[in-house]
Length: 153
Image (cartoon, rainbow, N blue to C red; front, side, top):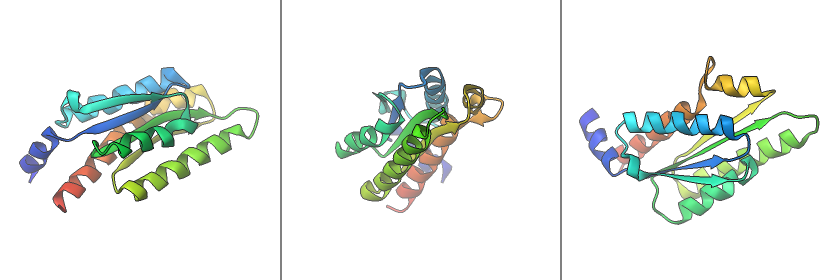
């Protein structure tokens, strides 16, 4: 079965929608996702990167990509760091609900790679630092769901 999944990955098309806000962190998330996908057998030419201004725009960026009908899965990668106002909660919740709805609407795996941290140190720690790599984790989850979908076809 492992060989069968590798063969299916040859034509797998994926989209990474990456927030430019907090770009030093989101670039690391993107690198972790790409590194994992390529190591797992996804052709680099089949991984498209779309950039959006911030986390709030992640759901629309994913929606626009999925409406094209080209992708087997998508990943939303972003970072929201808590500030002094409730803005953090609104942005994080809006992005979360929007991405969740897209998974159901399109029946395509949508990875949730949105860091929500108290400070920049926590964000870097979760973007390939001492607390793991949320970019890689997101890619792993989407790839697993793509494999599941392919096995049920």
